[in-house]
Amino acid sequence: MNASKNTARITPMASLGRFGLFMLRFAREAIRRPPPPGRTLAEAYAVGVAALPILLIIAAFVGTNLAIQGYTAFQFIGGQRMVGLFVALTGVREFGPIIAASMVAAKSGTEMASQIAVMRIRDQIDALEVMAVQPHWYLVTPRLLGILIAMPAVTTLSTFTMVSAAYLVSVYQLDLSGATFMEFALSATSPVDLLVSNVKAILFGAVICLVSCYNGFVSDPGPEGVGASTNRAVVLSAVSCVLLNYLISEAIY
Image 1: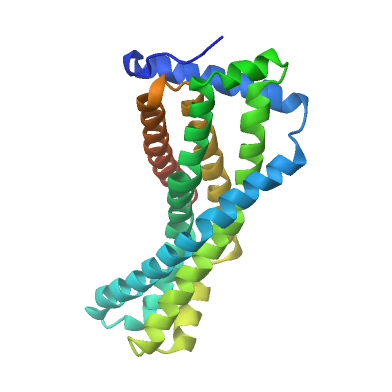
Image 2 (image 1 turned 90 degrees about the vertical axis):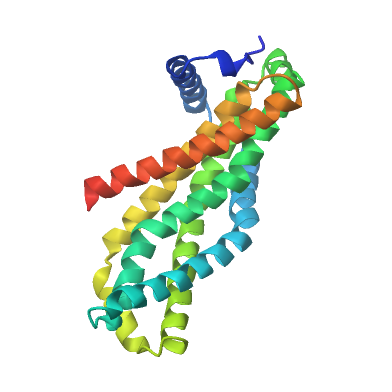
């Protein structure tokens, strides 16, 4: 049965209920059998490699801005030497995971939503059911495991690039000591911060995948429906990740 409806007329509470039913059905099917390994690795490659170049570029420029803004802020109290502390705290704890999540949502999340939405309006999801292939297992599970594999690696590379760019700006543009930068950076962070960063990355990846796939499944007919579902997936993924980031930071720090 075609599950697409006019989602614009559905209340937020009803949408939340539909999402809950989608999650229950997906969890039931995912527990029964593992996804195809080949498709899972392909999804991990698509998420990690496709978003990585632009992500590293953005992370590098965010790192340079953090160094400059940190230098300007601490200059009023004569604490320019503490730029490394500022960059490490903001980069490792907050900006690394959230920037990675934003780029993956914009790149991979839109692809997931649009691909599944196109399958919905072309009745290909119904065709899978006719062929006794459970669509939640076949379409969602490989994407979820793939993004869970890729997100920690992507986030770690993003954070490393951010801190490295801030180091270069601090040393070669702001004339700060590289040793002092690293001393403050290492003293401000701990392995727990890296662990929390990776936990955030995994949770963000799960949110992006499930929200994007759900919006693809409930897409309205026609090109307008596909566009609306894709836009809705990006907006909800971004808002959910920012809110989740706040809740995790509030609980831990």
